Figure (cartoon, rainbow, N blue to C red):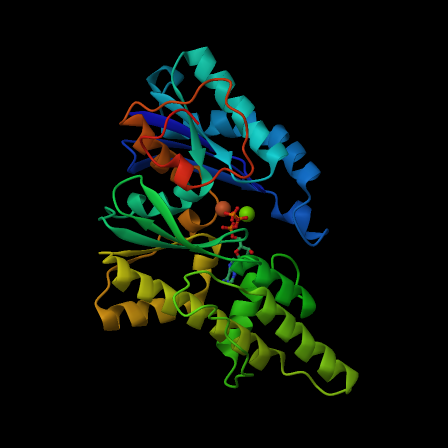
Length: 341
Ligand code: ATP
Ligand code: MG
Ligand code: FE
């Protein structure tokens, strides 16, 4: 089957055509990052307006690049949530219109299921599998006992990891989004400014990054007040090591506890060089197969939405045309076999 997928949950407008849930025929992404940079973050109103400006062109371009006719499409998939409600709506209206015009099924899709199933575009996910989701808005450990069945075993109680990176970066005067800058600085530093790790309760798979972020800000303020020179690289490295230590340790512990046959890394923070290196080394040591999609499939894209939508397509689980954007859509509720969300 051929699924046309649309992703507009945040600041990327993306349209893809996917065959059989596995093969990317086209996957176009238009980023608004330059527009939002001047505001130091994504401005929801502007994001919606930008999506409106380009969505039709992106759909036409994705179909053209795929070299298919609209009549060849089997279904239209679109991110239903989570995300910015106004941004989601633009993709949803476009998807509904196309599904209606072509008289083909609509598949409302979960954004994080998409991030996880990006891994299925590069290799076959084997079950049970454990996903470590690290992005701008999410930090989660998700157990997939079977295909399309999502069980949240841990999540952040405050900041998402990408969000913590961006806040630390802002305090160090880097432009938005600052995650990559902090990563680069950390990897360059020979020195480490040690910072605390938030392990939470001994058996918890939850995360917390706001305390760490505050610790970084406190160090910056103290040093500035004393008029001393701040070793920003050592601080960035201390922050990064604390984040990575907790993420990797909890992910590996969960793999063992739940007998996962594979660890899947996904989300935009999967671009983090330090995280990739440590995760690769520790998984190798422990004999855990690790999948990490290429960067273009880790950041927001519609191919991953098509890959997740395929789970519903093969089961005939379609979405009503009166579907609404759901900014807080729970991942578990989107598992296969649930009725009409
Ligand atoms: P969500 O999927 O949760 O809605 P999002 O899709 O907006 O969030 P992504 O696009 O997946 O988030 O990721 C963007 C985040 O990743 C930003 O916070 C950015 O700073 C962070 N990021 C990107 N590269 C790196 C890096 N090398 N190191 C750390 N963080 C990074
Ligand atoms: Mg983004
Ligand atoms: Fe995302």
